Figure 1 (cartoon, helix red, strand yellow):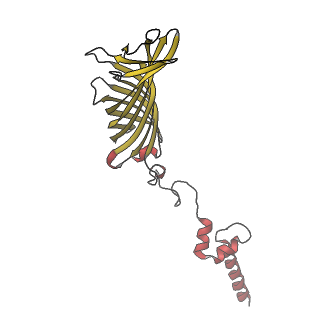
Figure 2: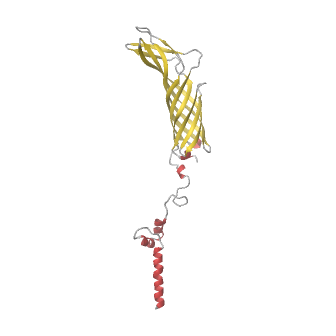
Figure 3: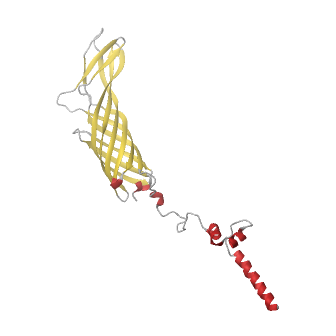
Length: 272
């Protein structure tokens, strides 16, 4: 009898240890859940869902920089200096003083290359393509800081003769589409590209007539095409700082240079 009682006591103790050996799911029902749930109950209560490196539920190392669901888009903003041939050659305009209107034309010295200088702010959006290629759209807006000096000739007169025109500055708008190829370096990237688009320039003049001052302008539009090089460094996984320089493929003495900051939708441009 004593042996039978001892065996029964040992069985009760072993059953109690087995009931507490499972995972506790929290709350009063944790023990029974671990006892009756089998391997499924244990998995639900014991798996670690933290982001610690090495745990089964962690994302692979560097997954934050290689999310293929995010397009490789970069938004850039900066400042550009441009020098290009003046668009004033053979342009004409008109100015009104009260009830009188006067026509004039712009005169440029023969066999002289007139160059304008402008400082512009630039905004650009680009998208990465396979094999290191990319495409971008760009818009530049700024002022003519040093327009080429020209003369004007009045084509009509009024009651008090002809107005006197004095050249002022003006503003410039450029729009581009670009395609290029980019190569990665350890700390940044290098690229070459071709860009083409349209330039619209407005040249300002001040007209003085019989004590009256009036502003007038001449607007001209021309095609533009440039070959450029670009170099940039990674400031952070999503931010680059770079320099750009280029020359016109249509004009001999036209060039551009500038600096910019770029924000990327994928860390390191998705190239690492």
